[in-house]
Length: 386
Image (cartoon, rainbow, N blue to C red; front, side, top):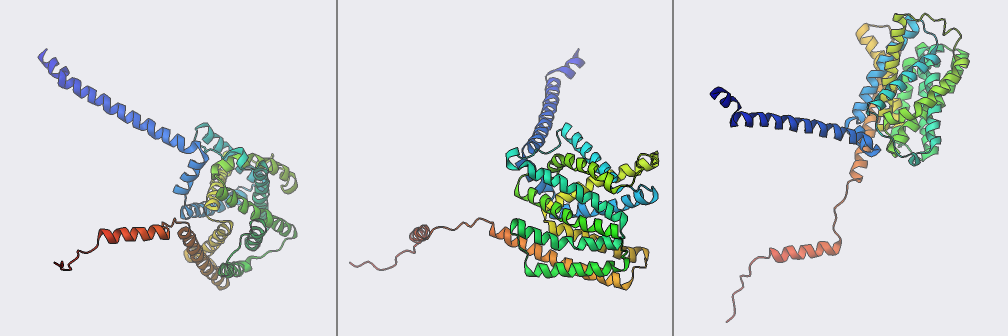
């Protein structure tokens, strides 16, 4: 009994109560953390703040760059070794998998809340879904029917199209120094890819038809996120069903017949699903980059990716790139460096202009100075007159 009393006496009871209180505090802390995370995603304003906090321009652009390189290898595997020559249907699979993942996020209460319906017209969301279907579908079709060089040449035309469209739609202007930097980038990319030009009339028509939807797609993604409280995932959830519907409408026109007779074995299906997962990450990272920067900066990032692939192939794998392509890539990198420095300078100037200026009115400032002078006036050493 003495042993039991020593174990379960007052000290033992206090020990058990302390353990129970610690467990209760840990449980309450976990519930508070879960509740705070839930509240951060329940309002569009809080979700937007979290996206800006964790996915700034550097993080978003780096994320998009890494995924873009990965999906190039993935699509090359699918269309090359696997032999899946159905670019629109491949895009359709990408967006179906993306919508399925977003549905899982929503079921787990991990999907950020969307702004109120009255804040964004349905026509804007519908237009973005339609434009996204044409931009993504025609991009894969152009990559199939054109050489890489001609595909990159078509991407060069996206830059001036975005500048002109933003001027007419939103009265947004670009400084003269930025225009010169973008011109240097475009010339450098043209020189770097001029050795791989193979003209195809049908492919050229697809590439030309892709320029305008691609430009408008980037502008809408950037504008909706920066002007309203839309996050990337919430905007993807609302627009993906519209994109899927119009991709189905594009399939009979741009895809060859025979997709059902394709050999859907484990190897081929796994490669296509990996490509679909990378497609979801590419769409998400691209939306984050467009929301954090601008449409023009996102195009410059794509051209930077081209230069890295060219120079990386030459330096790491000793590929026969040619000095013309190398000089063009280096020239484009120089233009990108100037453009990036100008963008950083402008963003810092805007941030400094938006800082609150704590200036007092002249009368208040004068009264404050008088109070200070009277408070700290030196002692009077004048001798008293008797």
